[in-house]
Image 1 (tube, rainbow, N blue to C red):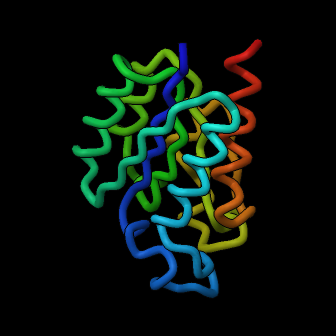
Image 2 (cartoon, rainbow, N blue to C red; image 1 turned 30 degrees about the vertical axis):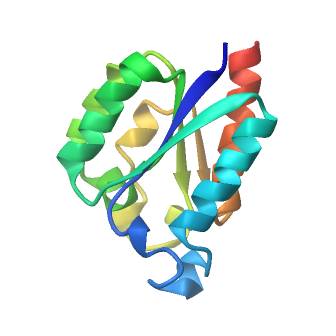
Length: 146
């Protein structure tokens, strides 16, 4: 049976490729989702991609993942640094959680150095650009196969 991975992207990630390309690169969210779906297929996984600028919608996707997914790759965007609600939802999810940040949050403003999500994540990838999503999928495939 194919295991499903939810790919969740938070606020402003719908603007990938357009917003601050010097930090986030020129790939669009559609590019990221297509590359992730292709790799997931190669790894024997199914991918369900979702993006929202709204905290509650991300919480709802995490709740849905409880029933539909074996793992979550999440780039919570700015909610990394503010959302106990997303952390609480992730704590109720029993699968693998990988946190991804396109930029290295530890080389940016000090308020970005702390992520609530990291307290639940099984792994954190930061500063690898959009390739971080693919690294997260590879790690998930390894964890789910073991």
